[in-house]
Length: 303
Figure (cartoon, rainbow, N blue to C red):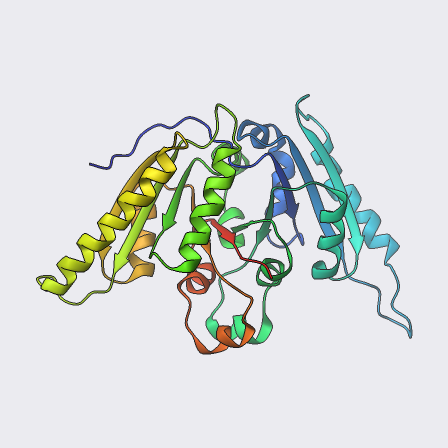
């Protein structure tokens, strides 16, 4: 039986790039650097991209705003634990141009970014920095809602920082993308230190085709068997693994499970290599990214 429990602090990643535009709330992490170290991070780079000055015939660097941004992030460099490397980077240009430049300079395990909740229409026509990054970077993204993080007090945020990747929920449907997600989780789990990630939940949701339907019962048994096999793979890496099979709407059931079992983040994968497919097929992963209040740990296969 699944139960809530107190868990040890987890180290899922050791280096993190925190990208903020100063409206997403992520800049508030500068007040929680010691707590970020407690979740296992050894290196943190705070980053802000300043738009080019476009008043005139030739766009140029807005030196004043670059200096302002650097000063605003300087607080991150105070009260830094001895075992933690903290740096500040401010570049001029569009985020999708400047972030890859920072990634070339620094060895980064995970990129933290904030994406506001959007409708499907908004996502398609206006896009998002997070979606763009998923297409061009090899690192996973940790997407945190500005609507959530901006409501925390500093004390609440500090506590949250200690448990960023404590208990990961992994939706699984035996697809090619799901297999890719498991392999990525295994990669990071196998490279973790002693006090690293300890627990995850594998979850399958089958379509609601009638509570007493024989077909539903058979599909549930099949899902349980597949989860059992994946569970064994993860347990071989000394991870504590829970499994859960539910019937209903995947988005609703996974969100409910995240609430019921104190999940820290939901890990998903989506394949952005086929741009045409994004416009013609609904994606659970994209729906979750647009609507979930929970932090989303996004992995995306690369070309």
